[in-house]
Amino acid sequence: MPNHVHVVVRIFPQHQLADVLHSWKSYTARMANRVLLRNGSFWQREYYDHLLRDELEFERAVRYVLENPVKARLKGWKWVWMREIPG
Image (cartoon, rainbow, N blue to C red; front, side, top):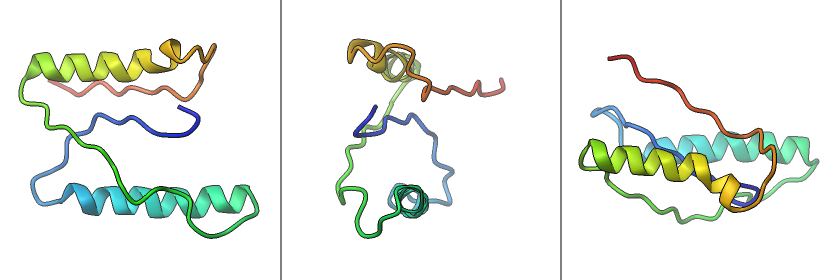
């Protein structure tokens, strides 16, 4: 999405979601600010998370994320990526 990010991810047990998001947001903010020739805050402090409790919820979440650009009428949106998880 042009102004936010959707991610469905599994966090390994030894990591905390807040730490992973801090890492992602810190790195992407530095890179985006470099590209945009600016500095300062890039991301909002808050984030929304939702625990996926079963396979059905997981499938719904993935479908929502993949279909979201289409619903927003972003034709040919190239920033959609999905990785299959082995068995």
